[in-house]
Image (cartoon, rainbow, N blue to C red; front, side, top):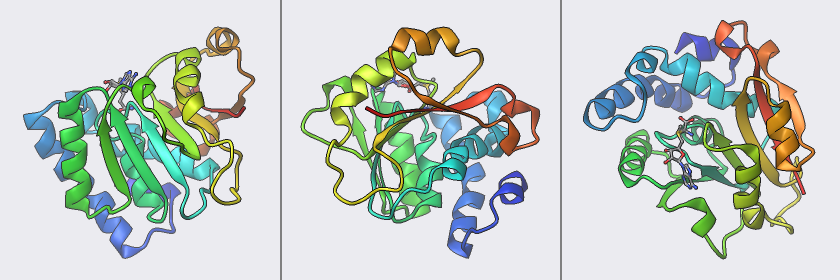
Length: 209
Ligand SMILES: C[S@@+](CC[C@H](N)C(=O)[O-])C[C@H]1O[C@@H](n2cnc3c(N)ncnc32)[C@H](O)[C@@H]1O
């Protein structure tokens, strides 16, 4: 938890309480339904919460913005971002129902009223538009962009701080993946955001139309 407040200092008491609750909630739920690898549970705040919040360090989402978390798994990056941005709406989607059961329960126990969930393959979602799609560790950029492009608003409901698009967390050498995606993303190296080794060669990839 201290590792989060070392870098993010503007939390309200309510947000701090929600962040504090995460360790116990994930530990409990993970014993019933495995959503986080056992070795990662001990580094929940570093590898999952801080990594998810790197999006908040770069993007200042407007109140009222609508965000889809594609392949949220156990709720990353969606849950930490929903804590950080209580006025932004997060729709957390995954193709595995039991993972969403955990996410729904955790969002409920945290009292997050800005989170909804949907059990679906994202490419099957029709007639919905979002200002942004966020995603971590789900698929190659080519697939992510193909799946989410139809879901990204061309006419956002309000002026946005950043153009609508896909914002994904990725690591390692991404040259080939980006080349194969046919996109020209903005690449933000987040290594310098935090001093922990885990963040070496970690990037935010931002694709707009
Ligand atoms: C490796 S997990 C990552 C989970 C989470 N984003 C994280 O970083 O901890 C990938 C997740 O993406 C989901 N997924 C993969 N393809 C998907 C699709 N087409 N639509 C919805 N969910 C998908 C899987 O079910 C799985 O839960």
